[in-house]
Image 1: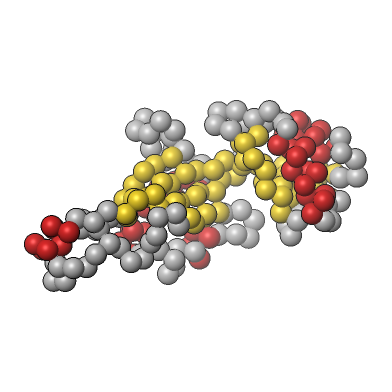
Image 2: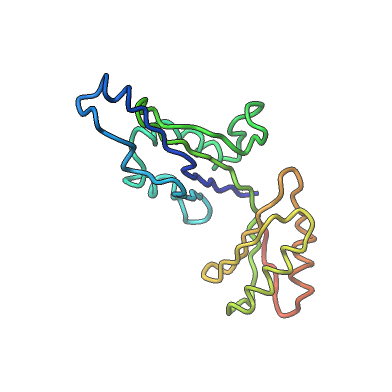
Length: 181
């Protein structure tokens, strides 16, 4: 099983009374770095390591200090917040700016990489996506033609069996599964 981490900005707050009372610039306003709806997906598979590359300059240092531990935990397949949230793969966290905090939803995404020979076009990718999404326990599929694999995102507590994924691809004819990570 592999893991990605999706970070979405779900809210921004402004405590103007605190800014007025405590800041050198009492009209600082809301955080200028993030917008609600901003999404960053971190991954560490194969030669990808966006935890280090994407974070440099892509996130405010104050926010990164607060959320990076949860992202790293998710990328390692750990429980982000066992017993605290209704899904241990998810955490709601905020930066530590007390006058204009940004609220993040951090989600561990569990997936299997199905390596496939014989894919060469978008039509192939669509056939494979549909076949794999029909397997029990599959939440969604992203076919990566550039890499020669499909990322099969699994439902919570219901990962599909490797044999079922392989059979779904084999049943299409013309494609070979060369490995599942």
